[in-house]
Length: 231
Image (tube, rainbow, N blue to C red):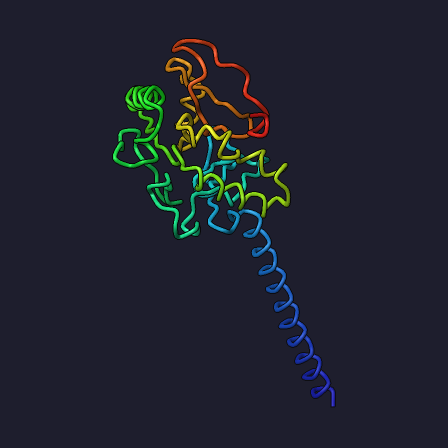
């Protein structure tokens, strides 16, 4: 009888041990999943890249945004745009960029001549510093700009909010050929430091990638506007 009781107790302890180990494993799996969710890049084609400051920077199609900003994915140059919008409208695929010397591409070739010359000179000098300047958005057709604005309105729920990121075709510097969005982040940083030597300035505080000619070469760039809604 004592032997049977000890056997039962031994089996009970064994089962308790197995159950405890199972609970521990479940907790560990849950913890790992939670940690992965916090560190994984956002979905919908957004990927994370490192910056010089150590802050995460997310690339949304053609738009890069530092943590704390929220660039609309609708304005990214994704492959999900209207089928009628093509490279002839200035479309650049989300996984592609262009050289400032790719003048056979409308997004580059249709840029204002002075802006194009400035960004080409900057790209040549940046290359000497080991920095490659790429364009992920340049000239856009009016209908492409309107499409981007329409998508931003859907995402943000109002044109007022959407206009913080996307201008109307009538006001867009991209449609006029007077603006370029630059990638990658080290190229943005380089232009923030040296762009004024070519007359290139950051125009909006929430878009560190958006540059336009704003001063004479060597001049002092004006303070950036808060966002695109300020014109």
